[in-house]
Length: 183
Image (cartoon, rainbow, N blue to C red; front, side, top):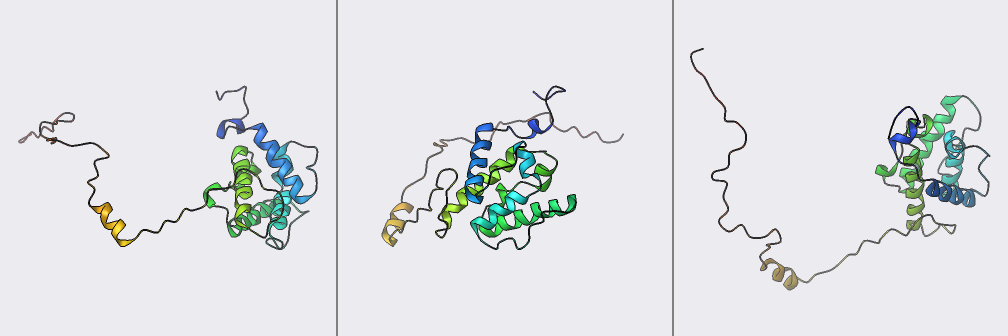
């Protein structure tokens, strides 16, 4: 229930403290350092930890991480992080926007992105570190012979049920249009 009692960031996406702890523990184990003693979203806000994470997963994917400088430099880290995610193979539907983290608009989506990176690690056989989340299902390719495909064509698809004698006759939606001439 959004209202004056709850901060705006809690409204956008439902945050899950367990998932945030899991994401944080995974990042810490990958980069080999603990988060600073600040709330999760502030530890990630300048993008430095996220860039380090991507460079650990694929060395050199981000050439230069800004560790000092103003807000612009820190926002640049987030943009570089997002580009690195795409290069690494993270589906772009799973990426948070800079403002989601920078302005704390949707921290839940930031966590979703971290889990998406964790899942993408499974597609990188060179990655020997810890994974985050369950292994994504592999594509299940099936090969069918010509005769098997032909057999499928003979089956009449009535999954939606039969339309025995159903027509649109007699259907009338809403008021009919009245055209009045001569006014």
